[in-house]
Length: 208
Image (cartoon, rainbow, N blue to C red):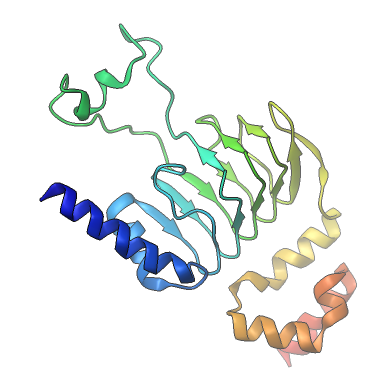
C-alpha cells in the first residue's frame, strides 16, 4: 500500500509541476505535507529532497534545478554523525527527530544559480538577492546583494541605496502576471532600467 501511495503521489506531482509558476494546488500540497510555503510565480523549488522544509519562499523567485539546501547539520556532538540517530528508517529510533531550528526564509525576487548549496548557517535570503552558480551560502544574505564563491561573499549590491528604497516602496512583486504585463507594456524603460526618480514618478502616477 505504501508503494502504491508513493507512486500516486509522484504521478500527481508530475502533473501539478507542469504549471509550477502559478499552480495554487501544488503550493497547498507542499505547504500541507512538507512545511514548504512558496509564493506565486516562484519556480525550481518544488522538491522536498533538494530543498526540504521548513522553508518560506516569496514571490517571483528563480531557483535552478540543481540548488540544494541543508536545514540541519549531522550531529557532531553526538556519539556518531550517522543519520541512524535521527532517522526512523534505519531502525534505531522510533520516530524521526524533529529539529527546532527556524525555517529558511527566502524573500521575493531572489535568483539562485546552478549548484548553489545553502547550509544551515543561512536562515534568511533577502529580497532581490542574486546567488551565483556554485556558491556555498553559509550565512544570511542581505537584500539586493550579489553573492558568489565558497564560502559565498558579497561582490556588490544590485542597486544603489536610493534605488533600493524606491524599489522597496514600489512593492512591484505584489502584482499578478496580468498587472505586470500591463506595467511592462506601458512602462518598458522603467521595467528594464529603473531609476529612483522614474519609480517615484510612476508611484505618483498610480496614486492619482
